[in-house]
Amino acid sequence: MISVCLEVFPVVMMALFLFLRQLRNKKSLLSVLIPVITAGIWWGIAYLYSKGTASILTLVILELFSFEVHQVRNRKMSFLYHGLFFLVTAVITVNGLFIPGSRVFSEYTLLLLVFLTESSGYYLRKTYEESAVQYQNQLLTKQVNEVQNIYMTMRGWRHDYHNHLQTLKALLKVNQAEEARGYLDRLENDLDSINYLIESGNVNLDAILNSKLSLALKDEIEIHYKAEVPKDLTVSDIDLCVLIGNLIDNAVESCGKMAEQDGKKFIRLYVGVLKKQLYISVTNATNEVIRKLDEDYITTKRGNHGHGLKRINNIVEKYEGYINRKNEPGVFVTEIMLPL
Image (cartoon, rainbow, N blue to C red; front, side, top):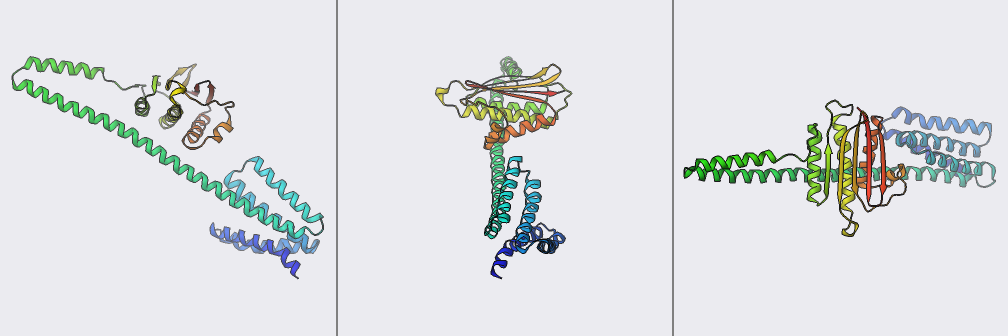
């Protein structure tokens, strides 16, 4: 009697675990059916074979159901992880069925495997959520800095404007109209010489680039730029701004990691039409040496840089474009081609 209870206990625990999870997910009908289905499977196998075989096979069926429905489909587990889980499950099951005296141990091992898989999935999901929140906070901080930079520039213009008015009032007060006219002419020439850093032909892109590049200049990063965007684009303005904005952010981040002995910090940006496609190139100084630029490189990156790389790849893939990354000593280059 005790041995039967020990064999059945893991099955009961697994069924209870699935019942509570389905109930928590507000799938009341399925949660009610789980104990009934479990009992039916157990009695059917026990009738054909034995109670011990029924316990371990029922447990395996519930475990595979749990893994397939909640781990693979919901979290898109990798093929390697998927195959490893099935291999370990098969080894434990065969061990429990064919090695005398190891059945109960195998059942509890399978139950432990389920809970370890669930806890690891929870940990990965929690880690991803925390990483996403951290990335959003960093992005918000960066946007606040860009707005503050624009605000301080506008305050400078306001201060200068006030001084210019005071000078003109003083000249007019003493009837020096010619001097006031000459002062206005000089102001007009100065205003004509003030331009945005970039006027690409796309207002939204200009706003992103001018704010980000002006901050790069404040960080003492040397910038070289040329951007001309055609009016008719396949890529949306939002995706274009996200794409180029992330490229600049990653370039600035790479420059920020450099020490004085690593050399000069610089960013070179080019946006234009090449072979009837939108061509984007960003080159920046770096102290990193990356041997292999593939999916592993993107996956191993963490924080802002890693999220930026993934967003860039997603947009290029969305428009069926082409992306090429090159890392040479002291230089990192990203080239992107998007269909027009």
